[in-house]
Length: 241
Image 1: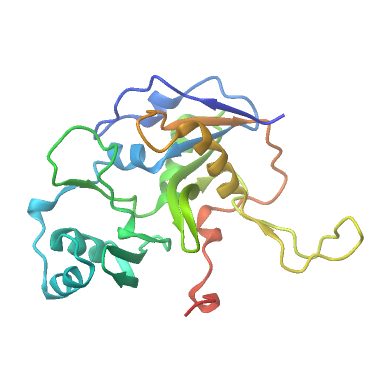
Image 2 (image 1 turned 60 degrees about the vertical axis):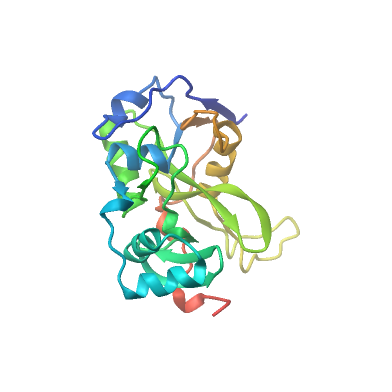
């Protein structure tokens, strides 16, 4: 049986916090620790004060199109490799880690008390952040998934997905396996890390719940290890360009 165990009662994460010390538990074999991107970014002090950002001409032009704060737009461009969509009140970009997301994942919600102009960036390499935490947790460390909430272009609402992972098969390739009727599967790949992140989101919530970490227990992981970056479709396979 799969069990979702929320780690409630955690303190507000401050820059420089020792996440491993805060999150260490009596883990069982096969446990998966899912944590929000926000606590990783907070501990790494990835805060930026928009008052320190000076928009250039490109940011000013894009801000006029999107009707967003030019300082935020400048920061989004700095954190991105490409603009995917820009219309009034919408700015979708490809972050340096490869994820396509609104505003390069830059957020102002649930980032603690502070100036209204303060924002929080994504980790530049979430897989590395996941691996680093797993190493710091020690010899009995669980697999680690770093989650973030994503919108979907053709559906309302957000779901949690994995932007970083270590110690588990983030993507399981079932192509060539047989289905129940003996037919070979031709396209089936399972986004396991996304499924795990989404399940954890049921306990984490999206608002004031204050649960940034969850243990998923009871999973059987019997596929080759793969990072969350393996979930990102290469640009050469972009179906909508």
